[in-house]
Amino acid sequence: MTNSNEKEVKLPPVHEIFSFSARFNIMLILHVHKKIGFTKVQKLLNLTPGNLTHHLTKLLENGFITVNKMLLSTRPTSIIHITEKGKESFALYLTQFKDILDEIEF
Image (tube, rainbow, N blue to C red; front, side, top):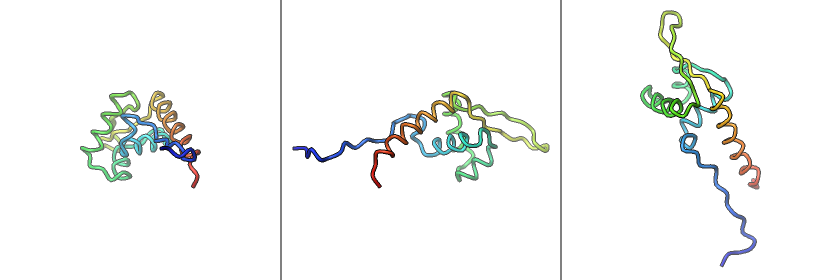
């Protein structure tokens, strides 16, 4: 028997890409900064180069980011950019998440 005073528990939206904490954090960083270097993201998230590359590949495959390789002071570097699709998709995900948080009494 269900108590009529019980509130329905709403869970955060499930998004195959953003549900991984590393990808969520990458998108959050890009949502704020628009572009950032590979090494900076690696240091911020404490990820190995291989692990970061794996997550970036998933975001690239979905069109949420682009990666531009360039020489910076004679050193090769990769700059990660958020795409318009990435901005819109992540903003929608954050809005859905925020709506759930707004209903919770702390």
